[in-house]
Length: 198
Length: 198
Image (cartoon, rainbow over all chains, first blue to last red):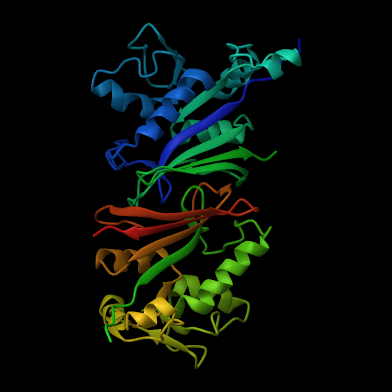
């Protein structure tokens, strides 16, 4: 059986002007007129596409403040922080140093297998589930710099906020992308999927 | 004959992370693999959709540095600046103060008429051409604040640059948009058209 390294996908909501949160990490700027189709697509990707989620402290803490200690119960969860002392939840792993080394190793682990289609079975391939990078910018920046991010998936919200936390702050060099797909939802969100060019 | 106020459309290229230029106003971050279809759509909109173009000094000057004094020869052209002393080109009008008052008045002027379709002729309506706001951020911010921008049209480029000039810097309140259309080009540019909600 052949195997392949798992993909790391930076999958994040943003405003049209490129912000993934306000300066204080709050995300109340994103319109709440949810589309059932958009929710179904997102839940499907959580259930079938990913087995692991990674996030920085700034992405984890807003949920924590309202009592959500385990935001993705179906996924193996890692929070990256140099300042947190311990994880508030036994299911959530705290990674306190060297995010790049940790993620590089994580991508080589076999991971769960996706449901096998007839084609995949016939080719005797194993297809591991992907790793979901939920944010935020500083963690994404480190992983872009190290060449570890394979895809960028942006849920582009129909709003401009003018300032806030950027998708990938202070990149030392620009990241070239290749458009894979677009999908527009009835609530005005546009889902954009890109591969990172090597 | 009924007439209607002209629309002001903020039509601008941006990176996926929301920047319309680098910090020094250069735009070499945008991939040059141009798509013939994209160019045709853009030239068509210049020829048939707009009769007037507005831009800030930061948007005008990069062209000026390479000798382009009249970047949109088919359009009535206004450059907004408090620091420029005079226009480098007789076709380019320099507006040195009160962009908001000037643009408010400009929108009420009749403007050129679009080519009349049978439907429009039958309805005895006049449909004036629109005003093209080509950038940059500070001018757009003033005009958003004054409620003068009717549409936002973004040519979203498949690249992340990490920092630069933002689409609409330091808005005092967020601008809600309604998605009108999307179009993906073969070169990975996605054209996104939104109406500004009132």
